[in-house]
Length: 372
Image (cartoon, rainbow, N blue to C red):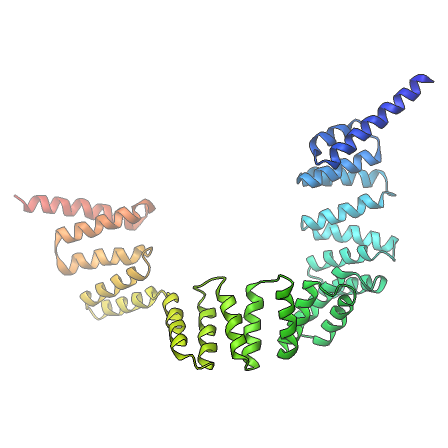
């Protein structure tokens, strides 16, 4: 009798040790402790959770799967396995799990939400929306389902449907930035700027200091002819990247509307300056046209401009060397050009670098021969 009691206390003590290790984040040691109770469902579940937490997802899936197969009544383990499948983007298996869970329990909003997530991952949007709606039907405050429904209808540009679900969520979560943003977008997309602006302002008050918010606020203010506020919003947008040509343009536009013409000119010139448009393809086309007209000098000039626009354009440098050798007939100049080509592009070991290498050898022989 004394032996049985001692054994029981030992098991309890060991389980307590494993639980303590797990609770304090010492997952690898916790797994080893739980493994001493391999037959225990609780121990197996904790091992699966530990593997999941440390990112060993293959072992976590294996552990969860074994646990579920051996004990169909462990609904919690099945639920966690389904969520793990979603994390791993294995939407087909997640769908199977949550379909089974919703069939057995029609009153759990979480099951329907995650069923919606799996369907969404499988690009079955109409079915996912039905699942989210069922989740909300069971629990009218289910925030994540309300958000997904609002997001779906923002994408569909159905403002009334957006407001239906977003407003329902805002009744319970009035400062939820996700829902406020969806409502702002619903009004913004339909050009109800006077209603969108207070919502964007609210987002900023709540700490959502984001580029896209300031951009849209600026557009809304500008459309409402509130040019000073538009300028402030665009300047805040520009602060994220002072070389953003789009933001520079809209700062300039708002300044122009305010008749601050000197400042507008400064931002307009900055906008032009930061827009470094590469014109190498255009110069390349002009060079080819010049070659067809047998104007090698003009073709060389165009290839030089193309190479300046795109210094990684090895074909431009190759053509410069080739045509310059033909046109100028200056071995020293040609040798210098081919050597420059090899220094920059010789590592490619292609036809062009091989050709340049051969020309370097030939030209050096020619120069040596002409020296005597």
